[in-house]
Length: 159
Image (cartoon, rainbow, N blue to C red; front, side, top):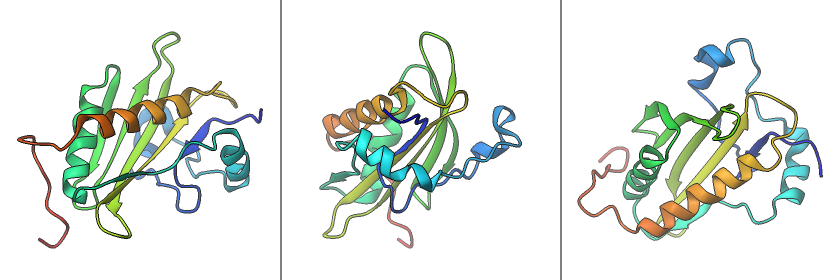
């Protein structure tokens, strides 16, 4: 297996970190996705893909935020409600490593919404599958919670 520590569900248009470079643990670090590893990411994790949901992008964003806020050892560090994106830091259980993640929600091609996620380790050249596992668990949880119901919902930009 290739040495990977930066994983994304969208390898053609990888979600970018906006706020993470400003965090103390990332100052001076290049957080650009290493395009040269996209093929290795696709080969190592062929199951990772954006999550398509049959709801509005605003509802999908509310669901994603709800899951992130309820995930132990996750902290949301930045939100852009108008762009339907948020970033955060996840702390690993065993070694307490801090990893950065970004979640992006966009309108689907045929209606609905699409959620993309990227997770990047701060330390090491290989994450031993931690980032892919984090993405799988997050997207599965978002899919399983169903519509946001009475939770806060966000209108589409321009509404």
